[in-house]
Length: 513
Image (cartoon, rainbow, N blue to C red; front, side):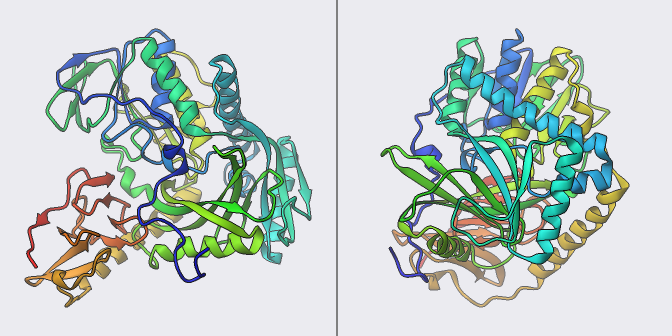
């Protein structure tokens, strides 16, 4: 175990899920094709959508800009739960009991779909039912927990108010939702991919979507200039690459959170846990490949590109894990990016009302296992002409006066502040001054740039101005990326787009020592 003020992890983060799954690989699209439906995005929403469309008899192509399951789905904590923090009292206050009940039932339906699919497809993905807890450590949040439990009673949710946890953590109280679940998400989704391709579905990796043209049919154009002609397009690419003037970048903001995978000295009794207070702390276990338990410690969320050195978040989680369970060995670290909507409800349905053939699933608010599955159900039902009883809850065109307007102004004032802050930043550090493994904002001939010197000593220098709307990106020490504090775009050390809404890379500079 390293000392508390030093990271206990390898330099390059890698999620446990990707290291312990064997995913198939697919070629880039290299020709024009015609299908019934095109799905963009190789995460849980896109794969579920494609799988259900193929089961419904549609000829489907799925394209992924990078590799399957290497985005948010591959970096999840993989809790399958309708308990999304303290949300049900809030939903009742803003939207009423009927709406809150629909939200709960729809999320529960997604959990049931995963459960049934695992059974019918005979999937080995370490699925287990677990009780899920939201706990408080302060008097203020203890009252919120009580209100949340009252909401459970109103909505008929199978839950309980408790003042102790199965784990050794002192709390004020907690609300538990019974019979939720956890699994290995990539092993589950690999089975869906195999079933999809077995039904004739086509998958193309390394194939980025560029735009959509509408006419007699819907034509998706890739970054390489190839066309996919189809009746419908489903955009499940985390941030929509095409928003049809829906202005999604003004209606969502990006948050990063962090996960450690550790072996612990104390036994973990089971269950899934998350704190009501911030900084967020999340716990669950995963049956490890060595037969023991790997404990996933998550949390420490913040807006992308804003806040302290990202490595400090990993260290904070490490300290929490040491205090609660004792860390014997720290094996993994990774981070995730989630999109948060104005009212905390995902956007699932037509990208706008003016584009009936184009669908979107986004803004899953850290609960992508159920919401991504639900997106697949709703979008596939719409394309297949089936009625989905809960589709109206998630309509992307909604704009509720309370709380949407308040959050709309709050988030966009924050964007304006970050834009100005980045432009006023002055630095005198030269790229040549960077040490191995160091990244920072640098001055290149009077221009604000971003520099990183890799472990081999090579300099990587980029223009830090985000190609979306011109905010200045900031260095992410924990993940070795350039992150935009305005709308959450992320870029590699060589300027390539990792996360949208940006769709163009950062310019690079050849700098010699």
